Length: 282
Ligand code: PAF
Image (cartoon, rainbow, N blue to C red; front, top):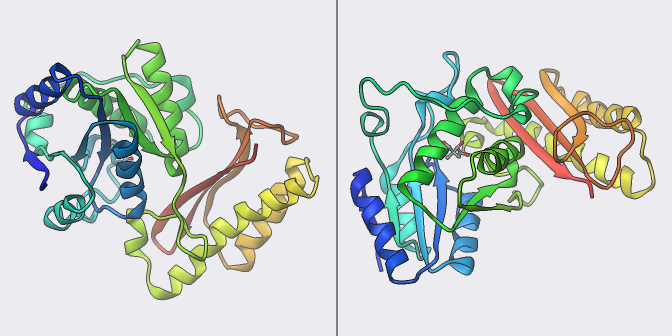
């Protein structure tokens, strides 16, 4: 059956409350559209874990910096709806900017400590925007479980901590990174890459996989591991590196020796496109 498409906050809330009255478990998949197989894997997981799946499509302006790609962010609502129609989605919530941020709306969430390094430092205000919109979506769609992709790993930690700190009655499930056959992590921003940049971009996942395989061979020293990863990026002429880091999975503080709770994270520019990726090393 085709999903119900709603744009009105009161209507989506009523629809979700009706599912709860019927004893159904509700799953929420928040997205900014431009859907790819990564998003669809979250939908599939929601279909497995819950009885009623709601996908939200909203390009949230408050999480984009002034010099970021808000206006050129890929958007094709009809295509997104067509994709979701073949994936057992029950409802789509696609509000307008004015609905989510009406004139005069001025409250926002102060994100937790884990939002400070990496993306938080390089993209000031980003996690404040993410935390605020995600909390608004949690309020409008009081789901049992919300599904997020591991690719935005720091985002999952920010949201997880917010849920804990604010006692939000929702479970979050983090689903694995979905990759192209050559290893490139799926991202809506991959659409910006020229064919040559697309070839170059594979070095990002290669660098992280190199860390993983050296760890499997017994290397634990982070300086050595990071040097090996940076060599792969340099060999692919990727010189604009925001970070390549080995950190604790929970609090994202740097580690010197890889332990069982470490994650490798990286953000680089390929031409004008900023890509991020990560690999959990446990
Ligand atoms: O990951 C995203 O697509 C966005 O940050 C989210 C969680 C939908 C909030 O706008």
